Amino acid sequence: MGSGRTIRRYFATAVLAIALTGPALEAAAQGARPLPRPQNLSSHLPEFFRDLLGGRVWVANPRGRPAAAYFGEDGFVKRCYWSNAKKSFVFNRGELRWRIGTPNGRSNLEIGWVTGEGERFWRVVLIYDRETGRLHGERFNRKKRSWYVSRDGWIQDGWPAAFRNACHDLVLSWDLATVSGQDSLDFEDMRRNASPMVRFPGSEFSFPGATGLGDSKGKPTMTVEQIAEEERRAHGTIRITAQGRRIVGIRPRSGTVWELWELNGDDDVTDIGSIGPVGDGSVVRVRWEKSGLSAHLRVGYPIPALSTGRLHPAFAMMRDLAERGAAVTVDGVEYSFASDGRVAGAGGTGEWWLSRGQLHVTVGERTRNWPWRVFARRAGWKPG
Image 1: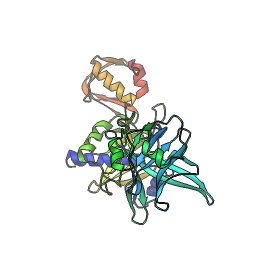
Image 2 (image 1 turned 120 degrees about the vertical axis):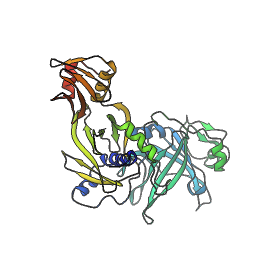
Image 3 (image 1 turned 90 degrees about the vertical axis):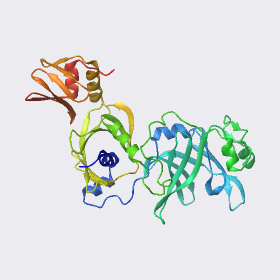
Image 4 (image 1 turned 45 degrees about the vertical axis):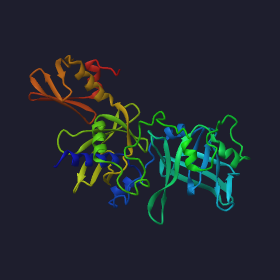
């Protein structure tokens, strides 16, 4: 089939495929063309951005001028920004409300306000960089049919002193601190005196490759090395998709077709999927058995399924049994499991593997299988 690099490319798009639901998959199932462009994802889960923004200030540079927006815990936004029409800094006099979650993304930012013509919205894809604290927002230009960076800056505790003067009549929360060192309206000077929120709690769990299609100018956002790392981390690990689904990827025993489990809140398998390459490997196809839906998707772009860092209990069980090195007796037969898939039991040696929510064990000429919970109970294993 080719090199490990090619297989890793298959995997990257495969994981991207598993997260898509609703209209996209329905269209694919009905024979429609694949999605015309890659999906641009906010970098983290919704709750992460709620925690990051709530009670803090986003300093950015729209249209080349500094601006600040305070995201109140009460759901209101207070802004100070440059108005070309008035040739001065102004603040919003009407009520602006903010929330995380839009029709196009659970983790996107939405700011809404009411006009005489009804409610209006401003929506962006949010990208947070864990190491630098950079936060930028991206929007889609319908005329150019491309993504662009709309806001670029950082999140900080405190309101820049320069904006206390520039928008002196803006009423802010009484306990919002003032950053005295940011006393210049020069954006670069404000940046030099900033203390961005870096390594914010939970930021280690992000959607792979979700660094912004505007930032990459539409080019792929993942390297081969990053894809390889995702493959290494994926096997048996619970992931959360951009739509909030919980899934597990299972490395194939042979070939390039991965198995997928969709899980409920109790880690029970509710659907089985499979993923395989199409053509030259730049596209893969995912199929779900229960729903009957399928989709074709491209390689190298954001993967809407982030790792929780937690093994599914079935995989954790087999890891523990292998690490113990002691035999377990199940249904009257002793088994000794190794982490590389080997097993020794009555009748000789063989192999074990997990598939379709079950543990399969072949020793000699006999293959047995158990639902993983049944085997855990009979082997006396409990989660740590």
